[in-house]
Length: 91
Image (tube, rainbow, N blue to C red; front, side, top):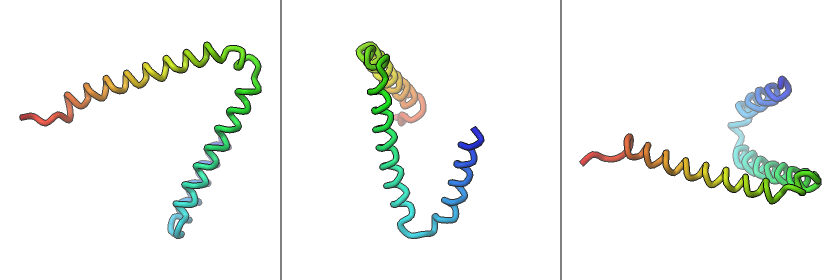
C-alpha cells in the first residue's frame, strides 16, 4: 500500500517539474497507452493460462455480459432522469 502511494507522490512531483517541457504530455500519453496495452496482454496471458477460468469461460462470459448490459441500461435510465429534472429547458 505504501509503495503505491509513494509511486503516486513521486510521479506527481516529477510531472509537476516536467510539465514545462515541450512534448512531455504527448510522450506521457503515448507511453501510458502502450503500458495499458502491455498490461491487457499480460492479463490475457494470465487468464488464458488459468485452467479453472478457461473451464468456466462460458459461465463467466455470460455473467460479464449481463453485468455490462444492466450497467449500461442503468446508466441510460439515470441519465434520462437527470436530464429531465436538471437540464431540460423550460418553455
